[in-house]
Length: 187
Image (cartoon, rainbow, N blue to C red; front, side):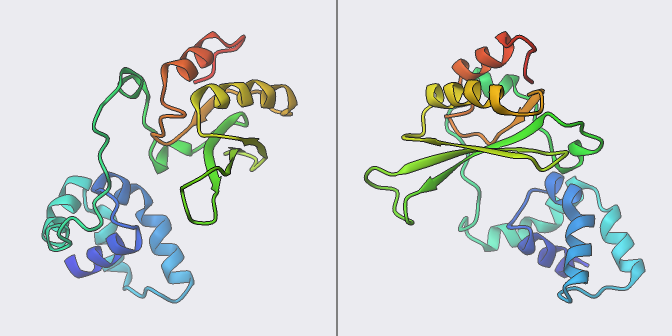
């Protein structure tokens, strides 16, 4: 069973136990549907019942064997904004109403992060799939805030909440203040 768990861990790009447990049903179904995974129903059920802490314990030798190659980079400084921000995992999106957007930046750099290039701020509504994009000349928190103000007037949905990664262009006091001070606060 550990070998199967390691296979799923590899397929998930080395997620931690908590996130792996949340994504496991979807991951296993997708692997089965595409012919990459075939496990009897009893073993499948046992894998789905493993707690996140047990997953982490069972995967510890595999993580050590990686020698740190695929460890996710930890942020060096934990800001107040990060401490105050709620973390939503894969299971946190059930029954979400329109207006909750995932937000990210896309670099148009041709694979080389040097010299000037354009960024695109992308907002995607989780419930409907509606997307809005706006170009940015640089990855900057003030520009993100300004773009959000512009996009908010163009979107057919109210902006209720934003789900972002830990990019400093998003996780900063300027954007946190803008969200809190909006006519209808943005989570």
